Length: 148
Image (cartoon, rainbow, N blue to C red; front, top):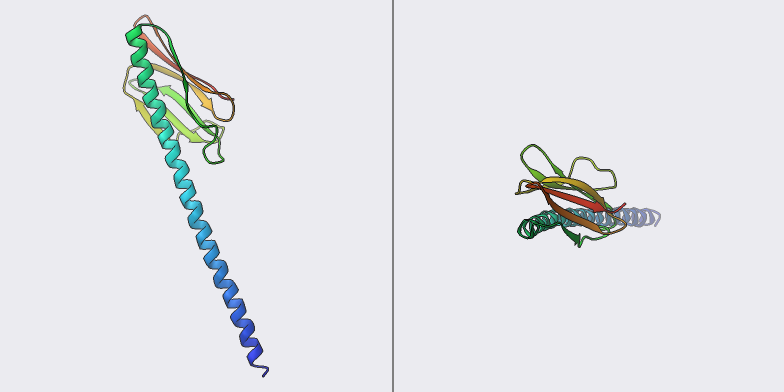
């Protein structure tokens, strides 16, 4: 009889360990799916801002006036804050996005196919994001403001 009780205890411990491993694997898989969904949402947001930039540039050029647009961006993606940055180099302008409140290397970059001087940042969490396009002496200036 004494040999039967330890086998039950070993079986119980083995079942607990296997259950913990299964729960851990499922949690890790769910976390991976959530992170991928947040990154896809951030990428979609960058594409949206680049598209709205082109729309605003086109409108400002046609009307030859300053144009402003309030962007429809979420407060958070998942439970994370994010940032949007407009920048330009020698030959191109682009939209960068990333998670956090410190602006650094962007996770996603989308180029704006127009000759513009782009600048400005938006950090999510408070206030709307506003995109402004103005034309001055045959140059187009695109500015992003809002947020913290």
